[in-house]
Length: 445
Image 1 (tube, rainbow, N blue to C red):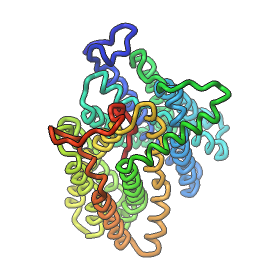
Image 2: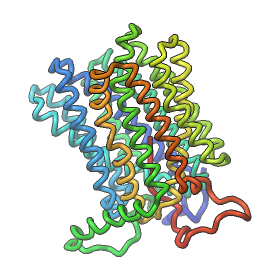
Image 3: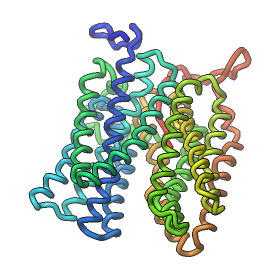
Image 4: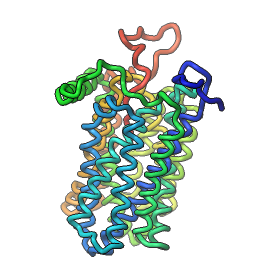
């Protein structure tokens, strides 16, 4: 591993893996802290208020600002630069998360005070996550790492956090109480902020190169920049189709995880322990899939990998729960689905990175992620009402069919042929301006 030349931007100089390593480390600690909080915070609210309704309200107050603020702060990330946004918003999240156990220890914490603190955590997490995401292609470029490999490693980081974070959170809550989990979450945000501030080389994560706006022009300039992101997204049929498709599947995944699996565990008599067992099987297999994707995905045809991944990760998990299959079969299907899911984000991320110019990457990424995540808060509400009205098995069958049709019908659209990069002498001619499209938004499942 080598360092960048002093004072240089490091992109055209010697290879350096430090930026990618530092960025992945910051993502790992902040995502792990978030996953720990996802166990500790709801449990804290539940045991202190004994109200499932208030617990759901707290969860909504975190996710709604996350989606909305992330959608609106793309122009800010582009204007200020993702590096400064990342470390500064992580510090805001740390302060808000640390205030919860502190105020509780001082006997000053009430629900009306907890809700704005949780909303602040979500609002700061949105641009903080966005800023880290949009620095992945630049870090890959500095390290001369293939884009699919870099996004694959990013996917491995996310999957590891999704697997290890809940396990760590559950252990902390069981052994030391939920407030310890919230304190660890705050510490993770501080550590992530320090990693970004201290390990990334000078010149990385700078503001996009556009004509500077005076302070008086910023308000109109903000909406001009926001509109530029919207117009670009409308001009990219493939990205727009992907966003809509992922938005539907994210809604179905949220319904499955938050309502359908717990109801199945209760009705089948397996109990809550099997929920963690299934999640562990799927999460571990997803890590393995992400590792394989990081190693070989850049050599494979994207359409084949993409649809095979969705075929494994989507409908089968709905259908296996509806079939009253033995537990070993359920675990096998969850593991196969996790392995397939491990290939999805590297393909999605690499594809979108290549199609969006760097000057637009913050705002387009923010819009894409917000649209793709917009259905997540609604998934549980819809699933709960549907199960109450029609029963578990019909809803599982309908969900599996909707998943299969969403992913496969989207693939029939003509723009889907653009997913695979042009190869060889017969490759299609590049569009004007395509040379600008080295980096861009990162769409995630």
